[in-house]
Image (cartoon, rainbow, N blue to C red; front, side):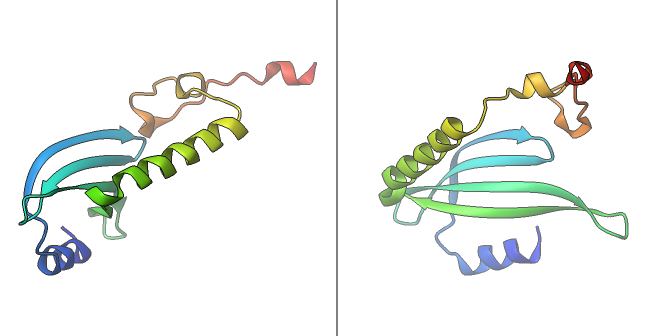
Amino acid sequence: MNEFDSLINETNPIEKEEIYTESFRAGKRTYFFDVKKMKSSEYYITITESKKRLLRNGQFVYEKHHLYLYKEDFDKFITAINNTVDFVKGTQPELSSSLLFDDDKNQENLTPILNFEDLDK
């Protein structure tokens, strides 16, 4: 736990019981989606991005970024994220990670498999 996490846990008394969690790895990052219960028994979502970092002294630490999403904001959040994803999909050429990398399950050792031989023709 870093200093920021300690500070949040000390100053954020609403963070209580963890109800549900789901996560996925994306390269060097791991994303956690946690449902927690406030003292008032209402649920909220914590989205955490965690990145493993190597310090100069050789020690590994996890850098974490948190987003707290409360029930009254769910619909607005979902609308905004869907609009944003639709925009990116509509304006960027679609590339699948399986087309770009040999092993998309372990993207820490990324090996591009793109073939540029036909560019000289």
